[in-house]
Length: 286
Image 1 (cartoon, helix red, strand yellow):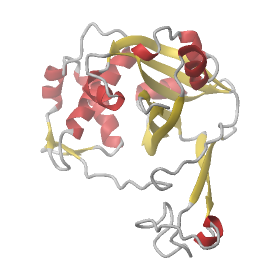
Image 2 (cartoon, one colour):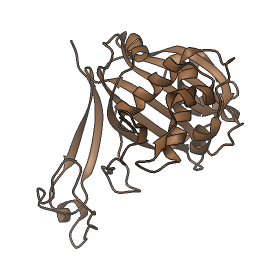
Image 3 (cartoon, rainbow, N blue to C red):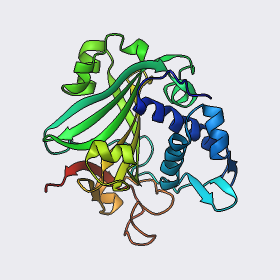
Image 4 (tube, one colour):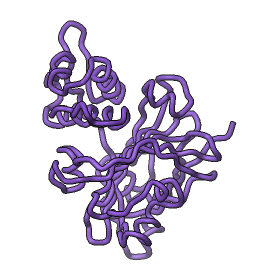
């Protein structure tokens, strides 16, 4: 994949380079080599600093490993553990503070291979790509990258993305009713460009959110990854840890979950039944 040199917007160009590198990682196994930065520059048609910044981001995220004198390699797989059993659901209350948005980039572009797979589109299908800065009480809190199938939202405007709740706009103006989402959260650090937007030092701690949202018909309608400030944003969870019988009712038996519960070593819980879960975001004040 080559990055079109005519692509406008630094944010979108970095996004395309990041996706190209993730394509290479996902097509390989842990320990497999990745082409050199020089080779990647020639293949993608971008500058060495652009490639290096993207590689640095994936190294920090634990997806690539640099070995001096040998090159770059796919890192070992991360351990993944769900907070609730598959097909279970929980509600996430809104985070505290007054949330607003500022559009950084808003364009219609081809989905590309990686985003196309997530949205079940061909790589050539058109999507709305949006980079926006999320603010809480006027303070930068997160950088968000949205990818929405263009056919679903032909009249989507920048004003909608800066005002109100996106899902409300999708329902009321575009007849798209979201149903559920699968979201992952992991620690990372901010790049120089992200640090400038978030008003924090480079390499400051952050939380990386990745979410795929589907509608009531099961169609993917949104793929988004967001970077939240680690110094101001945290996730608070409430876990119900009582015996399974107390939560499932008399005479009912809960199916045990394989392995330990998230955050609890094996044997620390009195019950092997399900752990009910709820979470909300908290913005820490100065």
